[in-house]
Image (tube, rainbow, N blue to C red; front, side, top):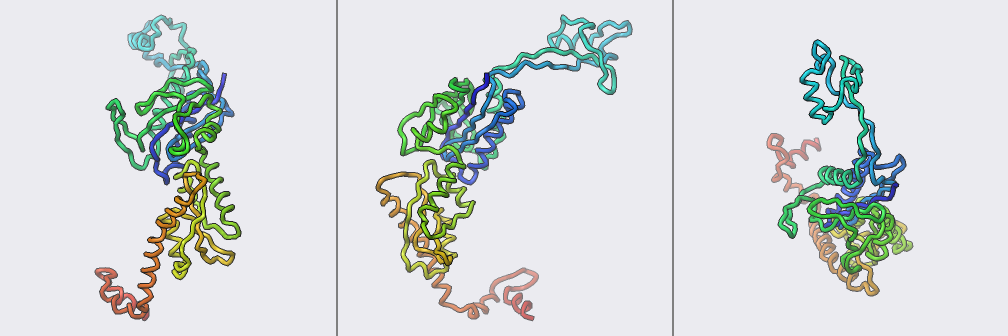
Amino acid sequence: MTQTLLVELLTEELPPKALAKLGDAFATGIFNALKARDYLEADSVATAYATPRRLAVSISKVRGTSPDKSIREKVLPVSVALDKEGNPAPPLVKKLAALSLSHLQISDLERASDGKAECFYYTYLAAGSHLQVGLQSALEETITKLPIPKVMSYQRPDGETVQFVRPAHALIALHGADVVPVATLGLAAGRTTLGHRFLSAGDIAIEHAEHYAATLEAQGKTIPSVTSRKEKIRASLLEKAGHDKVLMPESLLDEVTALVEWPVVYTCQFEDSFLSVPQECLILTMQTNQKYFALTDAHGRLRSRFLIVSNLETNDPQHIIGGNERVVRPRLSDAKFFFEQDQKKKLADRIPGLANVVYHNKLGTQGQRTERVKT
């Protein structure tokens, strides 16, 4: 009987820029490893999940036991296996003993060519293995091959030293409603996880593998799907922008998606006096340093309103809004200060200073380079 398999690894905050790649690699690795071991149906599908504090995968139609397999094993070339009288030679006796097949007679073996010489073959039926065996191997294989940017070393409460991208706290392995008894990173599999760090309370029990995403959203205030979280952020940004245009490059959208589990968009404001600075400078610092989303009007002019994506939902967001406005103000003040400083001196007045800037030790200064370009 096939059922949905769920595997989740609960961790500390994962690197946001690597989250999507880690999530895909975790899901693909386990799926491919189980497929190679014949635990999946032809139409089994893997669904990857990743949040700042978890990597997970749900795979449909997973067998509880892999099917029995007919295995044809090459024993030895006939020329080596038999002596001149056609009796079993010592190499054949030793080979059969090593394979626990000492009871076999020569008549039990198949004679066939391997393309180079005639050989003895033995065909037997290998019993399938329980999902626990296959999943344990799949977990170890996948975790070893994850594209981890930088490995951490940490200790478990029992003193065991573990190496992983971030400290791992819990492991879920469910086949339908049953826990698969596997272990990794010093963790034994169970059915409990944690939701949002602030919006949920206590352990959350996943009763069935198919209820994972719905249970996390309802009880844990966590959207486990990267795609669903990203689309919710995109829709909320467009809604809050109203008639204005949101500047949301995909790279920024991806990074913010990897920073939150329960995204909520709030509107903030900075002083209009900062609009005297070239808007490219303001947009750059808002996107790069603060992960904010700038707004422009219909003509492409920057607005003093901007949008933030918070990981907290509250009925009174003024502290969140005020805090973000307070944080961005020094950034914009720096941009304004350096822009005003640059305006105090004309570009033509800076030409003599080029004589003090080395362009190349064999090609002279920037000033000399400028003269060569002019001529």
